Image (cartoon, rainbow, N blue to C red; front, side, top):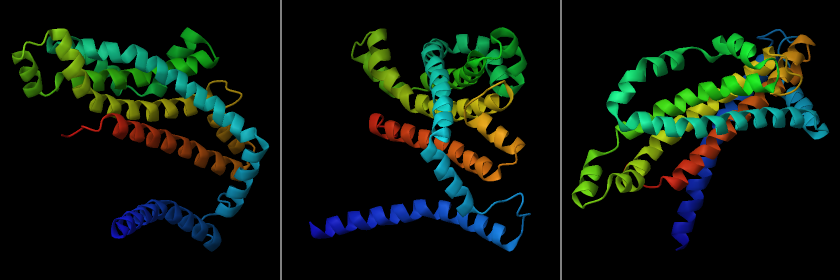
Length: 261
């Protein structure tokens, strides 16, 4: 028993060490570059100054407010994409002929950079939050539709045939077999969609008349030459995306424990 606990503790310590290597390496290279003058010190503040000023901004609440505005916009866009995308993906994936008939449209818009759609969505929805959320939701929707349809079309035929041979109805087969077979691919699409929605929202906050959010904070800091705030905001935006991905990975491993079996 004691040896098992020791092995578990050692495994956790090893995992924690592996996870710490990346951040330590990043800040180590950053510190050396700033200290050795590899980059003009007026363009690259030290990581300690950046982290200090970022902590002050978080403590004062100014960065927390921008973080929250961006998170809310991403949440709205993903919610819209899921509600509108999952049913469409299921319908398209259920019949290969139906998917092939619209495959060009889906792939065309999925391959079109979302930022190229900004002018269209600005004309349709104006300069407010609705345009930012709409373009991010559209980009995320396409990713979810594609992955859900792909998951439905590639559900394991052996399990479907086994259920059909036992007399299961088409509705029962979809509910008890195809739906669960589709979940792994759906979560892959969801993680991709969240990352894409965050990128689109950040860029939209930079250039589509925003007065708050992490994107606005980054571009505002760059214009006012507040470099520690700019670098700190970039780090927080990156941490936001990394954190959302970890949450979805945790949910995926908790819900889809049978994946690959």
